[in-house]
Image (tube, rainbow over all chains, first blue to last red; front, top):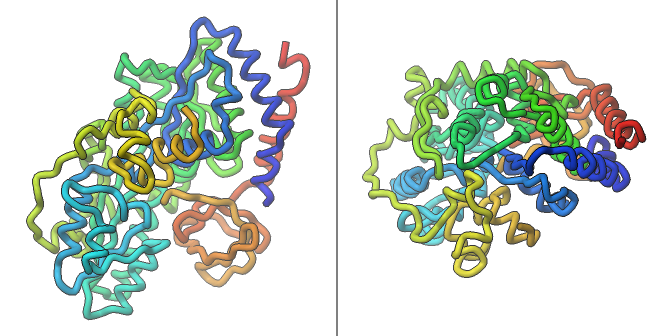
Length: 364
Length: 76
C-alpha cells in the first residue's frame, strides 16, 4: 500500500534508529518522551520500536486512548440507558467490554438489552430512520477526529427530521491533558509525540502554547515505524539543543491550521465544557457537550435514568498507566486477573490501550 | 475505535467516496473534508469519514529527509 509500505522500509528504520542512538549520546541526561495517541501506542508495541531505542530515550504512553480515558460513570450511564424500553444503544465496538461499576454493555447485551456495534455515527443515525418505533442512542466518545463525525450524524438526523436519534456524549479535546501532565514535575516529560489524526483536525499550531508555556518540545508524528522514529529523532534533537518548538513530521496529512471544515462541524454542534478524565480527574474546558440548540439530540437530557454511585474496579491502576506513572506490567492485576479475555480496566479492553498493547506484543 | 487508515479513492459520488486499502473497500463521507478530491487520490479514512487528503509532495519530502539521515555528515 502506497503511503504505508515505504515508511516500513527496514533500511530506513535502521538508519533512523542509528541516528537516534548517535544523537542521544550527546544528551546531558536521559529523556522521557510521551506519546498521546492510542495508535502510536499500538504501532510502538507492534513494531517493537522500544527495542530500537537507546537507554537514554524512554517512551511512555499518555492519555491518548479515548475509550481508556472515559470514566466509569459514563459506562454506568450507558448501561442505565440500555435498560429503557424500546431503546437501541449503538456504539463503537471498543466500549462494549469496558467494565462499569457493576456490569458492562456486553453483559447487558447477553441479558437481552439491544446493543449494536456500528462502524460510523452515520450508521447509527441511519438505523434510527429504519427503526422509527425505537429510540436509537449513540455512544459518542472520542477526540477531535471522532467528534465531527458525530456532529455530522446529528446534522443528518436533524435534516431528516429524525426525532428518535440521540447521543450520550463524552467527547474530549487535545491538548488539555498534555498541559495537565506537563505541569506535573514528578512525570518529567521532556517531549511529546503529538497525535497524528487528531492533529489533522486541530492543526499543529494547537500545540504552540504547550511548547511556549511549558518549554516542552512537540512533534506531530505519523503512525508508521519510520514516522515514529523520525518523530523521536526530532524530539531528541530539540532536547539536545535545549529548544522547545512545535515541529510537524506528519506533514503529508497535517497542516498548521488543521481541517477547517471539521472544526466548523464541531463548533456548530458542540461547545466546550469541563470533562472528567480517568486518571486525571476534571480538566477545565477539556470536553465538548452539545449546544443548547441541539438539546433534542442529547440522550442525557432526554432520558432521565437513575445512576449508581460509580466506582473504579478494585485494584485497577489504569489511571496511573494512562498518565505514564507506571508501566502496564507494574500493575499487580496485569496478566494475573486482568487480560484481554477478562479485562478489569479499560486499558486492557481497548485495542489501543497500553495494557492491551503490552499484553499482545509482550513489550515493557 | 480511533483507527485511521490511508486509502485510495476509487469512485466519487456526490459527498461519498469508495476507497480501498489492500483489497478492502469502504464507503467514506466527504462531509468532513474541505479540499477537492480526484479519483486516485489518497485519503485518511476514520470511522466512515475522509478526514484528510494525503499530500504526495509532502510525503515524498518526508521520505527524502528520512533517507538523508543516512548521510555521513549527519551521523558525525
